[in-house]
Image 1: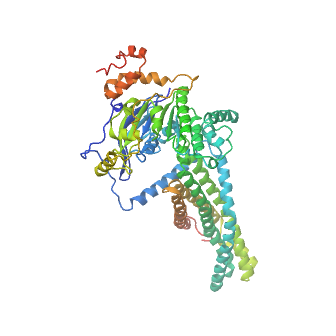
Image 2: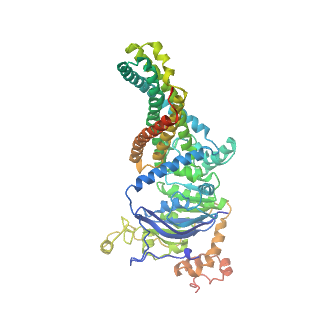
Image 3: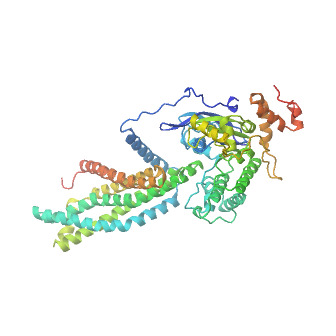
Length: 343
Length: 279
């Protein structure tokens, strides 16, 4: 089973500029989580502080009992072997071909024979659709292929925690859908804890068990997917719908005058960029490809969510209750479909 | 489970807690950089003895640094030896001590010129290449990716480069000594009409074995410095490809300044500790 990641009161600044402060959340073991946020809100910095590449001033990141913020160099390198990180543009070694890139962690950390390494690397390359490209250099392939090669490299050591930095940026919608399916299939197969940092709404709606959102230097929310997808929070609603009207502006801060002006434009019939429909609401989550084992995380998550359901907003509660199967309904003592929220 | 529950946007009444802002102190930046440079140097020494040792990378780097420095070093050391021979030759003639021309120019070449020429070329040709290579890898997140995979870039990349710079510097130092002395001989004997026998015979009049030792020790230390400075600047470029260019530039300048200063210190210590021959 994957490993839980506990983040407590994390605060990071670069010089005078505060990136985010007091971020606390728990990535539940073996579940898939998504961190949303507009560009420039420090999503990548957050991901890098989870693996100890960026040192926050305050707070703790606990992985397997090790605090990644303050532990020794030796512990840091030991713990990192449990992690697989997929960087934004792959971060492949430019001087090595794809095969050697993906074989790198195996050659550094294991004593496998070259034959075993070849088998593992070829398997992972086939998994991300790169079979037959072993001898190309990273400079010779497209950005999407580099990303997929980066994912393959992150997977060769069978990590317990997989962190993906914008796996979808630069990929077309079809490849993004394949990648989303791949991550869910991986979760079903190795039960790893997965965190995806993205601003792709389609990924956020269909892939994760839990969603969080960073905005204006704060963690706006983090919790079961139903909470964010049904939220009335203005920034969340604006982000999910891709509207210009709302607290998120082109630059970091947006003043009230601009908000009023934009609202008046919309009232006068000017399109606000969203296409007019509200895409909030819970859509069915991706399931593993038929033939693969079921995701163990689903049952664990249900136990966890049902234990805390009374703390969630009413809309989220309703949505969770609606999604229960009749058997689960009886099991958790929930009212039948459409009967309203248990108080 | 409170951290799982919904959180609210920061209050608009200014109650959000700002982290303390560090007060800028004059010179603190330079001090911090120096400290981090020393820390890298110490880390390199520590990790040199850590398994597994990167033999392959060391050989590649050794070959690379040697290949970019051998020819320029020879081309620089011939005229350098000649200049010293000509200068010392005319000086000794004025003083009436022509028989010591060979000894004086050998001392100057072996003790001072040779380690410095070696260091300047290792830092200028080898160090700039190391710095550019590591800088490009840093801005493309290759270094971070390596750290995340649990591989120390210092052990994997920096240690072999620094050791290669030291090794090449030591060997080049021998080359420069020979080429420089030969150049001095040629110019003194052929151009200034000096006596070949007297030139060679006076070698051992003033120079002795410790002069060769200090020369090699200097070369090793200079190679280490050039390697560490290049690696340090390469691992810390300031943003983008332009930053890498600046880092290469700075690494060469910083390395040169440091080399001349350390050379001064080492020479002063050597002259105090080792008595000159015949005294």
